Image 1 (cartoon, rainbow, N blue to C red):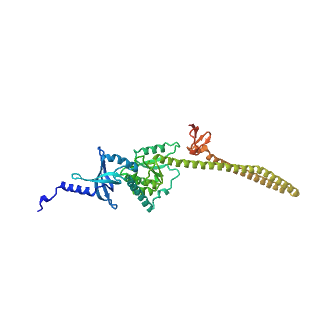
Image 2 (tube, rainbow, N blue to C red; image 1 turned 60 degrees about the vertical axis):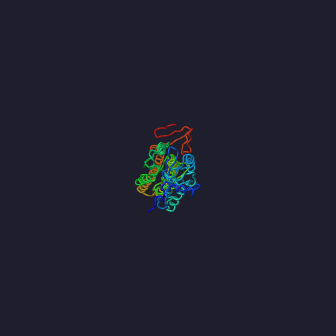
Length: 432
């Protein structure tokens, strides 16, 4: 049997391991890994685990405990987060300089001394680039951008958190607009930060698809927050869902500087929820301006056409009596010639000719009366077209118009806040 005196105790073995590690790793070394289970204690020390995953199936290949002492962590954390815009939290990949410590009782630990933010930034950029390249390879990167947005998008599906300040700002600006435009909105609640964002947003978009004919566009909005919160939007399934959505998707997730994959695939991307509302309101303003322009054109064209036809009718009206007089005069001369030529005819023959002349005269007068009546009917019809195109008739349908200093305000750029503004309704005016 093996003699016990030739064996090592566990503490002796651990001491040998510690000595071997100290001899092999005299200096600190740089390692790259993902961190998980990050915990910060009241003492200021930070504890976590380094892990390495298989690129193919995400299985864990290696694991080691890590820590950052308080005196290092108080400087390292704000430096890392200011450089990357990313929280020092679980799930990020880091490049760190560590020393190896092996304690006989607590085992091995990697003590972080320094961190390289550019590595983490590069990993985040690489992930977004890989998603975009995959979308492009599948031919769907710009699919949503090619969707047609109706000139007056008023039926809006909203994907947002109901408690988000950004949603409230968007709702108030959209429904309490100075132009009094009407919108139909429906909220499809979704988480907008955290690990469950992808699942929650895909579920919301799936529900909208079930009622797609009820909406003109989808808006995805959230208020401001940490830049790291954008990472949850860098998801291929989420980007694919937005890129292939049947109607335009407008994104405003509250970041002035940074973008996510959703910004690159959506029909329209703006920085904030209020900017999304402003975009939709601007679409209706342009549609209203175009409608008013067409109304003005119809009115002007109708007036020109009526004036032209009136002139033509007046010319005909002046020509008809003259033509009648000339015709009657010609008939009289002919009658005189006939009388002279047929003096030898019987009284009955002359009477027949007089009767024929009376019939012709009656037919001529009847034709003139019919022509004048027809032209009067045309004039009445044209006057009716002008009446239907008049501002008073249009205002009876609920439209109003705005003037400043007796000048019509057609465009937003024509509006001057300092001037007296008059809103003209069908039943009166209001001065602002």
